[in-house]
Image (cartoon, rainbow, N blue to C red):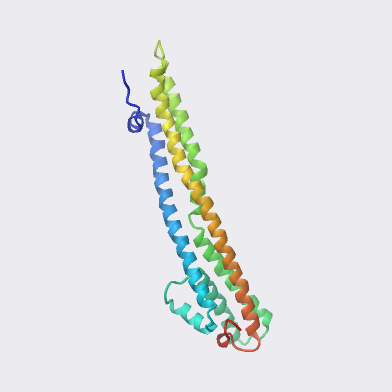
Length: 234
């Protein structure tokens, strides 16, 4: 007697607990792929926007012009531009209060940029921990479904007087599908997590370098003239 051992048949004939495990893993896998595509598009947009602002920043425009553009929100506003706006805003507020100490000006501006940097990194890293959790937990959930399915299969065989491979194979195959689905959910999540972690690290290094470079520019322009009148290239 030929038995249908296709994936669909194995899922349909699995025990209720194993089916629930499979449904959970498929749902997690779908959510994982949604996060992967969203994060891929989001990180690419962050890199593009940061590069565009970086080119504009070093094109020779004044700090005041760049700050006004950032406040108006003309075009895509990059994380790096928001960091610049936070530092520039604090710098100008301190100058309006007639704070002439260069160290105090730079310290206030740097703290504002670091706070903005941390907010930007929190948004960039959003949902990355979900991929890490999916990659680490899914195989164990699938293994639980497999163990439960095998236990259920052997319990059903205990009443048979003669057990053959043909009677054991379907139950074990049904249980192993849960492990396969668990790996299907975990492997893409792990690969995406590692890739996105590297990309985010590079973005973080670039933004930290910008904070230092902009701080140096403010230091050069703090004493001789108002920051809005200074040119970036000076």
